Amino acid sequence: MDAFRFVNGILHCEGVPLPQAADRFGTPVYVYSAATLRDRYDAVASAFAELKPIICYSVKSCQNLHILRLLRERGASFDVVSGGELTRALEAGADASKIVFAGVGKTDAEIRQGIQAGIGWFNVESEQELENLIRITAEMDRPVRAALRINPDVDPKTHVYTTTGKQETKFGVDLVRARNVFDRYGRDARVKMSALHLHIGSPVNTVEPYVEAIEKTLALIRHLREDGFAVDTLDIGGGFGTDYETGEAPSPSEYAARIVPLLHGRGLTVILEPGRTISANAGVLLGRVLYTKQSGAKRYVITDVALTELVRPALYGARHFAWPVVPGDGFVPEARRCDLHLADTELVDVVGPVCESSDFLAKGRWLPPLKRGDLLAVFSAGAYGFVMSSQYNSRPRSPEVLIDGHSARLIRRRETYDDLVGPERVE
Ligand code: LLP
Image (tube, rainbow, N blue to C red):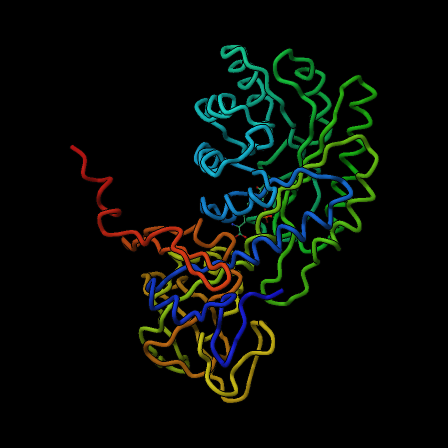
């Protein structure tokens, strides 16, 4: 399904024409489709259904409380990486006993918060963290479950900044060390070491790295079981690809076709941590053209959207399809491809108002002629979009809007100048 469609030449999200949303909520604005969130969640759930997995939606990809609630109602639990994310998940009504808490640097306060809440698993990433967890659970006299995050030394073939399963990254412990960790700490009375965790990177656009990582981890589980450790859970993380620009990312069922047979019948509760595969294509970022200008051979479209709203192009060189919301006759795109080149389009860089040359949304794209006031949509912005936004250049963060059928609802208000300076009004 595609909730973002051109109807009579106007981009809609479900039943709502996007110019209407832009007029009502202003720009820049994040607009999400509830139907897409449900549909993408269901696609993961049905693809992996045979394993009866616990699906822990990765809060970091798109964290709005209303979206968390919607996914929780669909059956999701949550993968969190901070006390703040844990607070969000709990406020969204999560079943704490199914929450996984990842991250290489959990503070004592965050560990206490997780224990207090009764979360499902602490995904532990080092010996020192485990020692700390053992110390705090003893102090609080509360039992917990822990999963040891394995660094399987597998190349997910993604951006170096989002590669996490290779040995030279900070994540997890290697396969050899893992056995020593279990030997040393695996029989603690309060910290039940019954699980392993993987998250090799994101997005991982092929299935092979998962297969390799899971096979290595299953071999480790065999050894650990031989050594008497009752490993009953394997969390394979997230990172499943999504269609950013080519439409060629595998679907959840293509991942599942290789992964399910590997895990079926192994006596393991399987946990998945999908983020972007659920949220990325559920959101667009809308902006308005402020000015256009020619500079030498280059044509610039200057919008009110900056890297403060969407940092992915600046940070990872990510390419998001961007297109006018009302593109005009002959310009309705038949596919969302960044290399689309229709007749009578212009070669432009789409940039924002922030004082950095890295402040671009799209570079070297053939777009229909744009003028002041025109609306532009940046697609696949639902994941790692708003959540990575900042107030740089003292820009208040954008609002978020959730569309469900014909209704559009504000789910986060636009920040004000008071939100910018308020926290600094201290003695
Ligand atoms: N589980 C763990 C432990 C993770 O660290 C992540 C993402 C996920 C699950 C979810 O991955 P997903 O399914 O969303 O790919 N800012 C980057 C992505 C960073 C991902 C960090 N960890 C981006 O914009 O591409």
